[in-house]
Image (tube, rainbow, N blue to C red; front, side, top):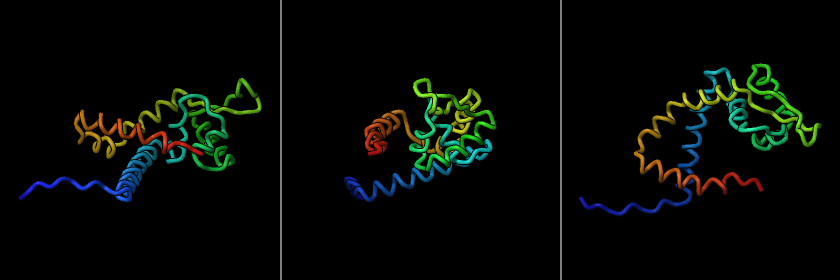
Length: 146
């Protein structure tokens, strides 16, 4: 048996693989969120709160109408996971901030993503470093919202 050089994957093959991985990761995230009584969208909103984020900014991040964000934030606020604060620069704007309990909840959701952790555990240190570098190179182009 002769060893042959691997073929360079096409963009279509790469897109299919990225989509499959994204779907699997999202399903793992949604399942972990559900174990904490959160919908996947509630958990996604919570995961976006590294600091104060305006309600309209959350709508952009979640790719939904601002009116939908109000209901999501209402439910998270009722559970003590977020709070609304007036923006110091414009008191008409309401920022959403994760509470300590909210930060802890999303940390636990991520820690409980067993399928994702198991998949990453198959990579050695060098492979993880390489993967991280490649993903960081792709990230700006994928996060850009014209």
